[in-house]
Image (cartoon, rainbow, N blue to C red; front, side, top):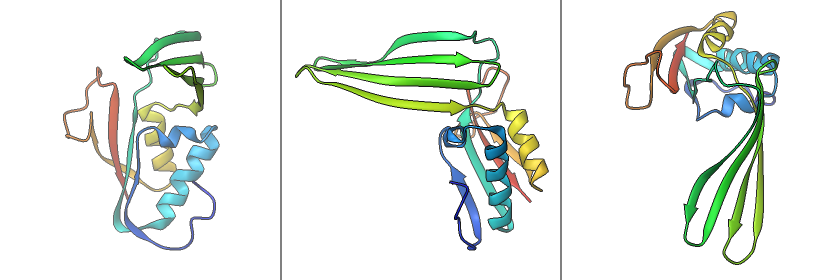
Length: 151
């Protein structure tokens, strides 16, 4: 996602729901912001869609039902380490036919103010922040954000 982006320049670069968090260190996330800043056209925008991490979420594991139908159930299991801002998890899918499918995932989350700092260090500034793609106002209770950065 960061390496080998080529030299093309873009008016808009959009990184969808939580994808920025798949970069496993703050340094790699910062490198992404820098790479994006180098590839934006003058006046271009970088749009980040992500969760707002819950600062009150304790360390440890959780298991919950993600979805359930008559022929399958998907559980979500994860382990959270707030000291490193990492969450490692699995979506575990059980089907009526007896199959089990594991879908692992791992994120290193960042708070909106951390993303703003990464942007500033890369020569970008926050232009807009909304709670969602419908551009509802971002508040302290917002669980997601859409942040627009520009030069």
